[in-house]
Image (cartoon, rainbow, N blue to C red; front, side, top):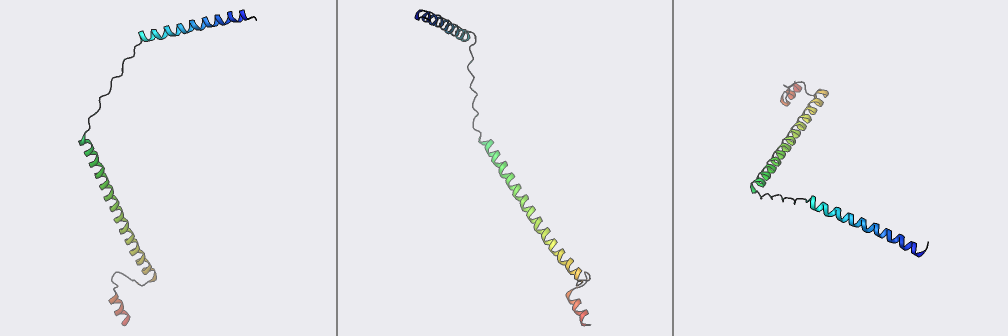
Length: 116
């Protein structure tokens, strides 16, 4: 290829590119004329409500107190159950050994029967 042919081909490509740029500019201008986008309406800001936060705080404190009381009730129940089981285990061990014969057996009556 000669320099003249190269120059002619480059001129044709440049003309095609210039035409493409003009078409893009025309499309953008048409979009701006036809489809104007409305500006978004700003959302009104809510005012600060102290009452709402006082209610939220009161509810949180109330729920916390109820949870604490529930935990204390569970702990008391667990202590009572443990004490009951320990007493029953001691009674069961005494009954297995035969040292307790009934509910009427008291230390003073046992000592009196052992003396006779």
